[in-house]
Image 1 (tube, rainbow, N blue to C red):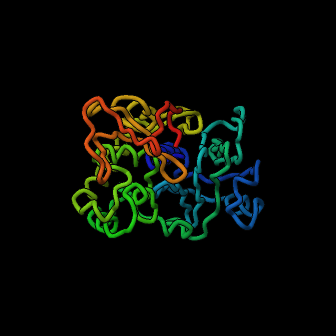
Image 2 (spheres, helix red, strand yellow):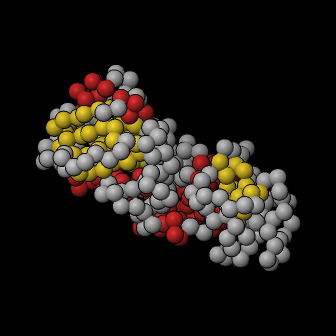
Image 3 (cartoon, rainbow, N blue to C red):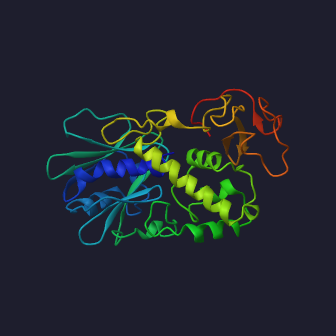
Length: 305
């Protein structure tokens, strides 16, 4: 699933094409892509046609297109959603779901293979769509309060990775960057939040922001063609990942073998030496964890889990 860096790359890519432009027409090729617009596809088309767009905005993993007059078009990329900018007569990519024609002759296309994402019209949503008002600020928001979020994290009865993935606490962080942040902060994903302490919680949040900033500079993380920029190019941060998707490889910091542990319906990648869990004995150089019940000993596909 695209996380904050990937969504921000898409937002920035759309900005020069959409800002100040008027929507001349909309064609919904697959109504499932606008299922979140409860009034239906025809109403979605009617609402969008004629809108003058402002600068695209983002909070966490959500993207929206503010319109003059106060409304907005809300987008969520889900697992495989993409925006592509092209000429109207260019061949359609497979799984193209919605076409948006602009008044300068440019066409913006919403492409989504798995259809977990989608578009909807948000009345009065230009500043912040009410549909995502519950989503917390992300670490790049100028009003993000790191000490307050760290305090809220340590007050929870949870584990640190669960807290990082809770979009009501801090938004934009998904499985990839949670793994990377926790590795940088030398913190096991299963560490109870009540045992973190304020200083360590702040360190984890700072690490999350730092790794996402680096990913953003590299165009995001692309493991496959499901995430690309608006021009079809991929991101390259997958080459810089320290632990996520690195099962069986040596830790860049200490050389221990990276392992994968079960986590909810996904998995966590970590270094068993740098990120020892509470009550775990130290691992000598060259030794990997022997907890067979939670450690996957075989190689797996990059980016899965």
